Length: 261
View (cartoon, one colour):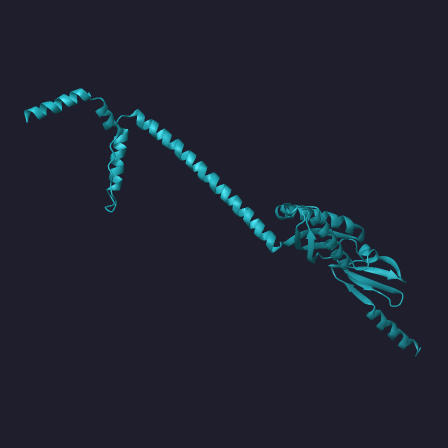
């Protein structure tokens, strides 16, 4: 009886030390004598030493910063890209049993897949369709990690670094495109101005005194600033009035006035 008490105390201490807690955001992979037995849910579990062992797996979404990778696009342009990958574990047993280090494996797989994806597109596609390329990379990685019990939620390309020479070329292309748009816009404005002037001239031509009134209005606007030099323009109607005079009659009138003098 005296030997039973120390044994019970030892068993009690071992039982207390064998209690393992699995948090809500974790799962435990239980092994019995080295063989996989089951996945432990959140709570307290008794893991007897020597015969039992278990590993905790964090099932929360993880963010993997993919290091900067140098790749060559489809049109032979060297670029440097980096990205961030988000994934979680949906099968803890596979994540432990099927791959040695799932975090390292996902990181290496994402680097290789990213370089291959960039090599399959041109530089313009990489810059303008970044979201589409990110979705393609996410789909490829998710398909490869599915046997590992890992779900890839999203892949975001953070930055695309171009060589300095390529930056200057792109800047020149953008400048030329802006100049092209400026010339087109200016020509459209001149076309609209010409059409408006044509309509205005047609309206003035239909009213005999319209041009004269417009001339007087222009002179009134110019007279508000004393520093301007005003050149009076003779309306076309006045010149047309002189056309109606007979040149011979004007000469006879001038001769008569000369003889009277």
